Length: 489
Image (cartoon, rainbow, N blue to C red; front, side, top):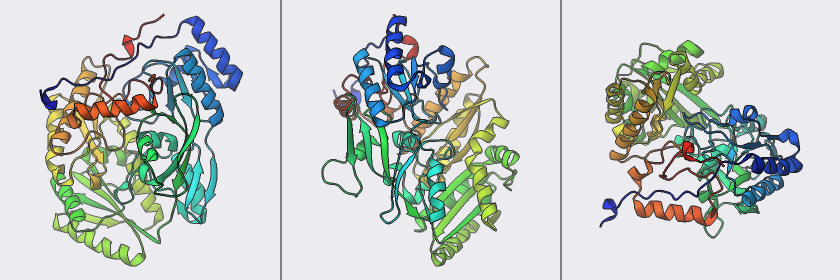
């Protein structure tokens, strides 16, 4: 039997059991002695906030803890191991794939108190931060000295760098600079047996296996990250931001392909369709045209001369593909307003729908027109509305499927539409996630891009680092059962 003919490999899941009243009380006593009662939450009311993230799944934890140091986290993990209770690390809860949801209950570790910048070395372009540091706060601290931290997820005003490491987050400016893994040199971690160790370091290209690269994007299934060494960069000499307005999605998509094919690589190329533009403009009043089929938000940066040259090339390509208008931000205030509109797009959709489901597929840029048409056809088939806002430069799609969970059967239709969209992404040579991670959302879709051997090898890696599967269990790999299947004792 060939690999393709073999049945799907499902992740083996230990028989986790919900905590009895007695066992939970014992764990709470130990954790309270370690952290103080104030930093151990265990009533159903107090832990309700931590049963969900920005995805559409939810499961309640048994206990939530707020440690202040790596040593405390190590002790928490040892307590959990002794009681054989799952441990789930959680940043700000902005994740879109269910990565921080405690599928099997247990202990959720929240990094709110571990939010410091520990060291900045401007000469060597390095900083050391704790995982609970909000992404944007690092750049705010560095800007007065002329530096910043590149990865900029749309949720950067609230998401944490530890969460970004767990999901290998991206953002608009990763087109030219790369995602989180390209900006992290080393980590301090707590292992599954509660030991503190370091991987990577201050210098790049250390000999031996790239364990830092392995752990970034592992979604908390291999270790718990407690410190992060990041690269920082000089702020560019010149930055130009522009929008190009199009009357068809195809013209906008073809513009993106030709810009990259021409050798011009802007810092960012973002696309929004008409539905999103209308929501964004009503929310932010950034000056986006609400009657356009699509708008490209583009940015180029670097030395003044090269920025001017790139700007001229980009405008020429936009005009070639029938751009209605290309408008360059007049000043920093207008530039920031344009970006505020884009980065608040998800929130703005709340004006036109009670709920939405965000997908995260990646496709070759040349396939954008076809895939966008298929996204519309799939959602129309299920009677759902869809808006598109995404990182067009690297083909990272974010269809927002609008729905109302109070309508019977609508959640199931949304999930099926999301699955079919990812199928299309895989069929055209793309992948199932660009930056949101697999989490709970895309476990079954892993089989669209990996064969059984791939999945077995990855599960062997997880078993090596996390032999009892107590670190964020039930994530990444196809698995039997959901949180409702766990029995109470």
